[in-house]
Length: 246
Image 1: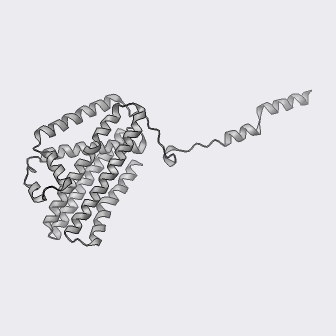
Image 2: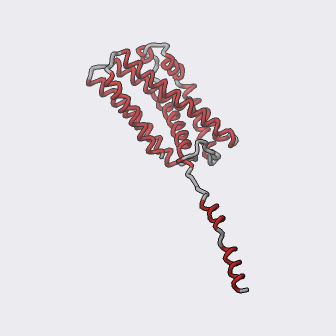
Image 3: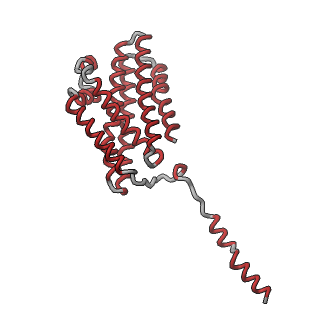
C-alpha cells in the first residue's frame, strides 16, 4: 500500500511528456526574427500633441514668411531651373527658414527611424539621432566645400550644396504627414503608415543617389571619385546611424 502511494506521488509530480512540452517552447526575440512586427501604440499622447502643434506652427511660419521656399525646393527636385538662377532667388533672405525647415525634417526623420528601430519612443535615442543628422549635414557641406576649394570646382560645389540642402529638407517633410498621423490613429492603422514611410524613404533615397550620379556624370567626374564620395558621405554615415539605432 505504501509502495502504491509513492508511485502515485511520483506520477503526479513528474511527467516526461509535460517536461518535453515545456522544453519545446522557445522564445525568439522580436528583433532577431519575425518578418511581421506588431507595433504598439505610439506613446504618450501629451508629448505627441505638443510636438505636432510646434511642428505645424513652424511649418506655417515657413510657408507664410519664407519667400517661395517650398516652390524653389520643388524646382530643384524636378530640375526645372538651373542652379545659378536658384542661387539668386532669395537664398540669403530665406536662410533662417531653411534652417527651420531642416530642423523639422530631421526631427521627423529622427522620430521615424527611432520608432522603426526600437518600436517605441525613446527621447534620448531621438536626440542622438537628431544630433547625428545635423552632424552628417554639416560634415557633408564641409567636405563638399573643401573639395571645391582644393580642386577649383566651385560650380560643382555650389550645385552639390544646393542638392544636399534640398534633399535633406524634403526627405523629412515628405514623411512628416504620416508621422503626425501615426500619433493619433488607431493601433491597427500604424503598420500601414510605417510601410508607407519606409517606401517613401527608400524611393526618395534612390532618387537622391540618382541625382548625385547624374551631377558627377555631367561634370565628367571620375568613377573612382564618385565611389569615394558615395562611400564617405552616404554609405559610411548610414552604417554609423544603424549602430546608433541598434
